Length: 320
Image 1 (cartoon, rainbow, N blue to C red):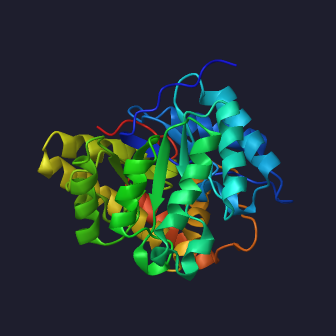
Image 2 (image 1 turned 90 degrees about the horizontal axis):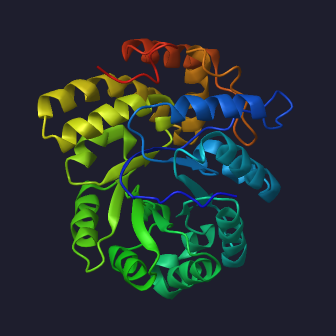
């Protein structure tokens, strides 16, 4: 196997969806086609697999390994692959990390353990221990997935800084704190560390506001559909072109409204329906506990794609 590509924690990193057949087995041909679509977007810097967007909570370890293998076959020589580490137990998380490195991944996206929801904020040594266990299993760069504090799964800023300081392979956070003041503080304080840590936004429903605070990039499931618009927005912000950024944000607005409206848990369900509407995915099957959307909501998603000016032929094309 060829050596993994070097991961740089910056730019636009889409998190790919995972199509299923009607019997809920993985649609391998559909997944490969989706990977090729996303990877063809000019300007993305990596892809993410085995994360929320691919319904990782419903996938076995063997299925995760298969997803990574297909990803490496399709895009692994062109783009770094970020592999999700989704496990409540630290030792299983370490095993996933080890398998990801062996399979050719370039970086890890480490989700918080659901155990932390019952008071983990009061025991920072638990979070540090979780990351140390993963670090012992793999040398891959780590992206810390930062959740909202209200969820019980977010790390207090002081704990987050300790993780970044004490775990030498942490190179970035995927920031979903969902609090503007905390978000800005994290950008400023992580950038100011002696070993600078990048901030990748996943505040997709207020992405323009987030990016102008100084984020190094974004990592988002919405990129499975609107990566081309995200690239255009990120570049406009980087170039200081506020007028262009606002214009692109106006196009993004109807899509993220359709994806992220309550209930939030249907976001990737909706992204699949968007790609079905655009003719880029054959079917929008999801695994339980997710359920098929109503016809009314599916129609709303279609209208949002039209409001954004997206068609099957333009959705992954460079934004003029």
